[in-house]
Length: 169
Image 1: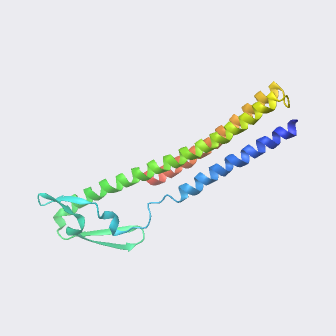
Image 2: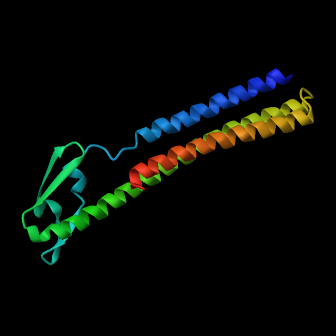
């Protein structure tokens, strides 16, 4: 085995790791807060008139545009309580989406590490079979680690960008 065979191995590793990064990018693109729908407000109960009441009993709800829900209180004095209840829901929803984003990113990093593990095993077998020297194996392991670190950093960047979009940071 020669340098070209190692380059071929590195090329394959890069291609497989890049595929995992692109998969994470595609999955994260699918994480959206989605089109506004009044049904998202169904679980909201508002502290009003001495009890907890469903929001639809305190306000008329409508969706004038895809990303906007309008809650028009029947009693304007309840506006503050309605707003507080909605804010609590949206914050919780954003945190749920953020947790999902973190899971997708971690799955991507784990897949990249799996590619690293397979490449390292191949390098160790090549050395054991005397097809490469110990120096070549060490250089190969270092190169595979550099590729792994770079691809994991890319996934981290995608995760941070999506988190900023979801959490408004």
